[in-house]
Length: 120
Image 1: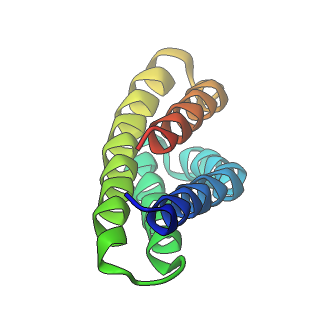
Image 2: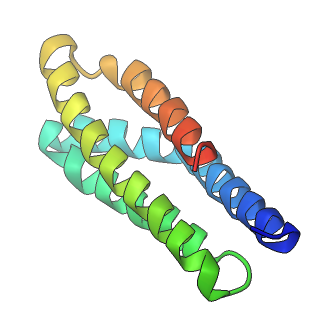
């Protein structure tokens, strides 16, 4: 990987982390509101919408160099896989502890996703 590719990769990862960090509080609140209004069944819908916003932010970032697309695809796959795991974990924890579990589960999941993207 040359210097330009390395720089662009770093910028793409920073863009993904920035999108996750910026969307985090909004997503968490939307999940809380959806669960309060519709119950735990609303989790998949809320998490799916969040996955779409984060993936779109990464896809929309920067130049469309072909060699960056595999990294974009990896980020999108991480977001999707992590979102699915988050939804399952939220379902379990809300069933066990109630809606108060959302904060802890979400904050932990967000930190893990950021670490996984930084490791790409």
